[in-house]
Image (cartoon, rainbow, N blue to C red; front, side, top):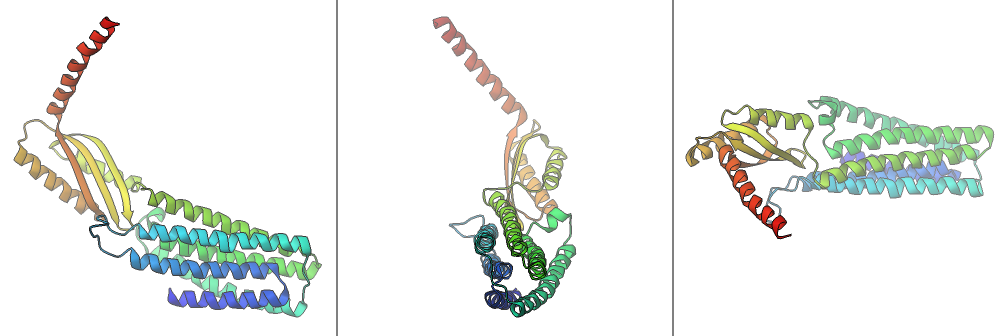
Length: 314
């Protein structure tokens, strides 16, 4: 990732210099895009390092959600530094026009061509890394860092293509509208990507449930236990990329003493941990079904006379 960061910074400087020499709004928009990508890679490096810290007294569930926090900051960076600046360049070009320099535009197109090759190679590497992951497409993209890198590389390739098209059409027609439109399109693309990444990070930070298929597996495992009469409730929450919280409230069959209940709880927790290795935190709320039913009947009997007395008093 450090190599990618260095390459992005070099490309950003080249785009900025070319954009200033040519007076090209599309090239300057792409320079801002590359700066945003560089800043985001710094955020992702921080996310990878900080999320691996072990649990402590202040954070008993660990630091796995650090990845989601830094991914949210990366989304904000894409929105502000990339999307808003690109919109500004597009509107300024429409309002004031640009003084194009043929030589500067040729140099700018060369810079964009080199950037396209670099960003394309990075996108191929990211796609290869995704395909090497096991599981469904959704499971492969659970890592917010990988999602962000893939989104950055995809938008980088599309952004460069839009800038090349806008600059080329501006040179051919002499009409700045083409290049201003390219800047606005780059801005819209970056704002959309920032929104999607920010929404995913928000969902994880406020406590997103585990994948539905995984929840079904846990519920099926619980229901298959002979000592469990019914599964009243099953709650899951993603604590990090490879860390999951599982909380279940179950009713046991009648006739189990306290020692047997404890043995059943330990065995069930081990079974869940074996079936779902990422379930690092498992909590069981165990009750005896007949005892619970009797408690409900007792509560109902207690409420009945009181309710009747209130109506009679009225």
